[in-house]
Image (tube, rainbow, N blue to C red):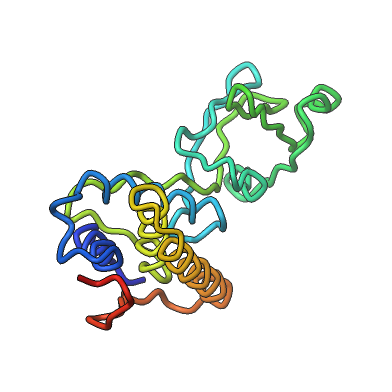
Length: 208
């Protein structure tokens, strides 16, 4: 995977809204870029957001990871290991969990309380997708198949919300949509992530 820094991402964003750099609109850039990253991450379970973690279950209940992306709740996997065996759990509805006993490897997700329910107290591992942490420092890095999709979506939101320019908003959001679709294709094919290659100094109709 290729890393891109938050500083680079902010500069790409500035270019897409016709600014020489992001410094005059840093707080706006930060907010819009993080919003775009979360939106794109909720669209598809990209491997950059995949994590595993242990959850301790007591009295049949354990707390789900605090950064779990509920957009991809159907993608989680629950399992545990003994010395020689991996036991995988199957998901059932919360109103069905009481029909099983401690020898059944099943779990239920309580969405309202953000908890996992099991039929026996134990520690399980949960493979899941997380909501990406907000970027703040210039040297914060992000791995993404086509990073400029984030900057393009943020630029589209800028033109839509701050400048009320529907043409520029539509153009940037359309480019972002195409780039996200390309990113999904690359992800599915296992193609290595690449560095962002913004549109250099070409005039796009709004460059100052």
